[in-house]
Length: 157
Image 1 (cartoon, helix red, strand yellow):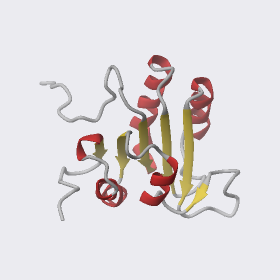
Image 2 (tube, helix red, strand yellow):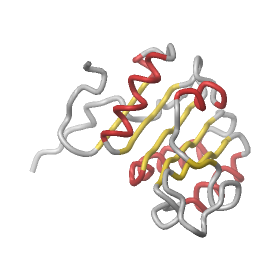
Image 3 (cartoon, helix red, strand yellow):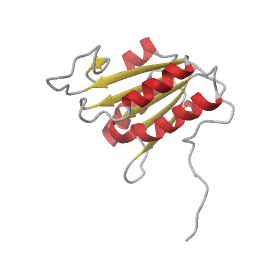
């Protein structure tokens, strides 16, 4: 069996030089939690935003762990969105916002023009947000993404 090093750019640099925004949808949060753990362990002064979209509380994994990491670090902001809140879900209690992560919300709540963006999630999530970030003026060099399934270009028209 052959093993090769990572071929993409979906990793946190050894010395991050800009704020970091981690955007995930569904199970795409798994690598984001790993990056968040690295930020907590190795970059105590790094500004970070962890923004996650889930269907509802029945599918929202690792929320308590993520919030514990944020509390330990002190410079991490957590925001969660539920696209289909369950009967026991309430914005402000089980999650932060109803609906989807939008470019408008990112513009108003993250350092959109300075940050490095890391995205992971299903194709519809990435197809919506990757081009939207570029339209918002985020350089494509600052948008790093990973998704499940065959590779294709998300910025293609």
